[in-house]
Image (cartoon, rainbow, N blue to C red; front, top):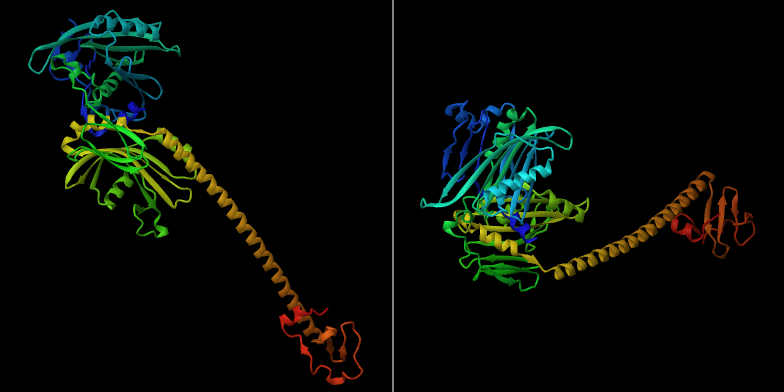
Length: 545
């Protein structure tokens, strides 16, 4: 995990121009070798049937302008931002890295598999024995393709390497092999293999295509290798680096001191004298004594503007943003940095899938790697961040988290190995993180229970209110019906004490049972002390039939 994080933080912005170690275009036998560091430039004599001029003309790197009308090129940044190359749009890149022996490999394949270029570079398992290494490469080729047939025109060249003082520092052996083989689909393939060995290092590059078509695809395949760029200081076994130059000795190991955050949430290693600020829950700021170099694990909280949240410490207002945009926005809003200029922004689908699996389909999530320059403390800083944003299902709030390394722009390349080592050593306390996750889950499910209870309570209240509204509507309807009927019939009702009510019409007064009242003491003045039922309240007190 530490190695994965260390590779993660190596920005493509510091990628330096590192051409492929050897580019060759074979015609009738001529080829040209370009030493990687420019220390050597050797023309190998061509086959007698060709002239040196024609050999040089065929050996020159393919002009991209000749391919531009037919081929659209695009930049590719490796998974961990350790190298970049230019390739035809739509071609498929696969890359890998292993520790024993230390080796990084990539391949670029045409979408239909008609042609392919592969490159493997790293420490030689045969140490300095170039012949043994070349034999092992050929043996491995035969294992992969039992039908391998090597052409008889293999060529070999040995070159002396010199250090900066001009002294011999080693020897490099270069071998070019050609041949054919039949793949798993029973298709015959033609390939050209370049193997470089020496000084404990190895380079193995191969271009291949369907038999008879290698010549027409070779310019594009070689152009891919020619546009390979590797980040400085990534691979200590890199040719031209200190490990490849024994005369200069190996680099001094970086001394790091283990430290732990006061809260116990995380631990990391940093050079002696570096200071830390514990922000809680694993967040921290680590800086050198001069406060020029920074490693940060931090975040920011955001609330949607429609909620009009004002004056809450540490909470900003914004709709959901991409991580790079959110990072620059939060830094500018809090006055930490300004004038952001992004050098590259790369999506991280691997981390995005993990976050989406945890967050679910209703929450907005995004993860990016990005490199940038900005103004901080009145000077230009350069930085690299891996950041992510995640929101809630209601899109009411969201959060930014980021792992960041920063240094003054002119010191960034020099400080990168140190900052990468600090970031690579950062490790969360799994026990505390587990407890935090368990607590969050308990709170989450408790919140769901409270929400369920509140929904049930609200539902019961709504049911009662709806029932009351229904009953009230029925009572209003009954009273209106009563009034309408009395008006049509020309009747009127009076409250009559213990008798309930009496009903009158033009023919006289009647009891509730329908008996006409004719005797005294009622007479015509019987209604003098009675109250007419002319309101809803009187009607509901003793509803007439």
